[in-house]
Length: 206
Image (cartoon, rainbow, N blue to C red; front, top):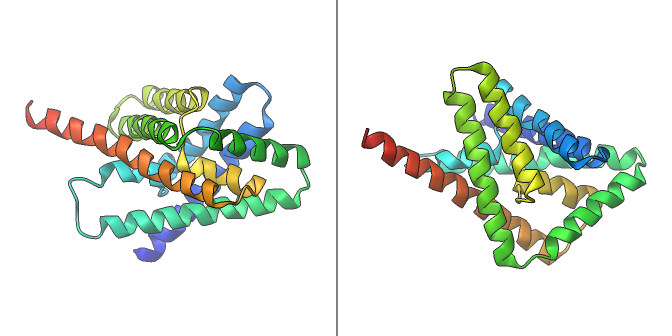
């Protein structure tokens, strides 16, 4: 089971990494945001473990789930690292520079702005994942996933795992960049968990 979690987490990181590369290579932002949804659709359809998709279900807490989340986050980072390293060897300097510029722009926000944007992204990811699993109409569930991803990108919300790609690909390594990534991880959790708890309360009072 532990090995399966780790492998599925790495694969999720690979899929999000590829989606991030698609986004960086597409000039038109709206088209790029829609194409990015390939990553999340693959994660959901294959049953891979993505931190932003799993963290919303942390509460009510079940024994061992926190460790699953930690392994998921580490696995996602490894998957992202694999894609970033492979792409750096491709010599695509323009795209690498674009990744660096994108992450540097994120660092221009204050920490609390980053936290708020991360919370909002966590909400969008929870909506996407929950809708995919609960919606009975296939076309509608896919549309909700695509729109949720497009919204978080176009609104410049902060997705911790996707941002790992821009950090690693652009090699924007500093104490500030790592601290901001931690804020994104926490913010994504707050946003997703909050919506899940609200939905749980609504279900109880039906």
